[in-house]
Amino acid sequence: MRTNKNSLNQYLVILSAFVLGTGVGYLISYLSGLQPSFIPLASTVLGLFVAFAVPLWQAFFVNAPSLSVEISAIKRTVSDAALISLEDYPELSSLRPVSSRGDIYLPAFIELEDTRRFFASPGKASLSLLQLEQLLGSSKQLLRDLPSQIEERKVDVEKIRGLTPAAFTKYECDRLNRPLDPEIEFDPDNKEKTLEEIRDSYQKRLDELEKRYADIQTNIPTAERKIEQLRNELINNRSIFTISASLINSGRSNTAIKVPGLLRVSIGEGNYIDLKLTLKDFENKSEITANGTRIIVFESPEVSSLPEEDRKLINTYWGQSVNARLLLEDIHSKIYVSNPIAFAEGLYQKIIYDRLAQAASVQSKQQ
View (spheres, rainbow, N blue to C red):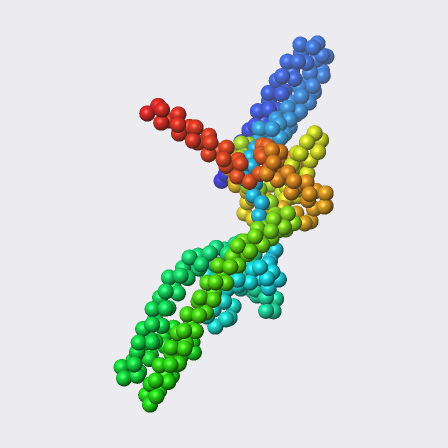
């Protein structure tokens, strides 16, 4: 029904344009003193011209899409493909997650799908920078928690030392076995031996915890410095840029943007750096309806793919007072250029926060 209605409207527009063009043509021909025999022909030609020109004008100007592009954020992060093996850096050995039996275990923050990456190579636990920083954070928390745990284990050791074979039962043995691995088998004919084995196991648990505490306390400052060094190296060589932008289509027809994009960073008069970008989630995010808005995200490849000179410039000017613009192209081969934004993370959001705070102050004064 909508298609038929649109076709009828288009037909009426063409017919009206033809009638109007013919009338104007007849008037112009008559006033110009054209021979009467040519007036109908001239009127018809002008009418046809207007009839076809009006739809074309509507298609290319009235109903054309019109995009405005506004960058909302620039973010620089280390690529997920950049993994760090704890075994390659002795300074990080104290962060190695181990169970009470000395086996590697997966910390809670490492998701199940990351298990394969965690054990990327035989005998090596490989982590992303984010996971490594989380591991450092968990080690710091463990450093705060261990003193109270050590005190609890000391109390347990003292209680077990106070037990006598006469008061020692199978029930008591089972209760004391809960934290032990392997468990101690209860020998009713030699309770003293069973008690001694349990005392040794509890003392060993205490010694391991005290050793773990001393190791973390000694090595965390070294691990922090190493992680900071790795962070800088990975940011400079294995990082990617993520560009978030808003697309506003003020035109009267739909359009869609193409996958490639470009971020141009202006670093001086006639000097610039170009970062090639790729639209994420292209299938769902590329189309912008008439009078519609779309939030899109572009992502760059790792900076390691850039020429060495460009990589040095990127690292030098990131966070400096230089501007960047996003350029993209739609399916009609029309190129759009965004607003300029500082080539730094978080600065644009700070500008918005400042505007909001200023507006809030004005509002408070009016109340």
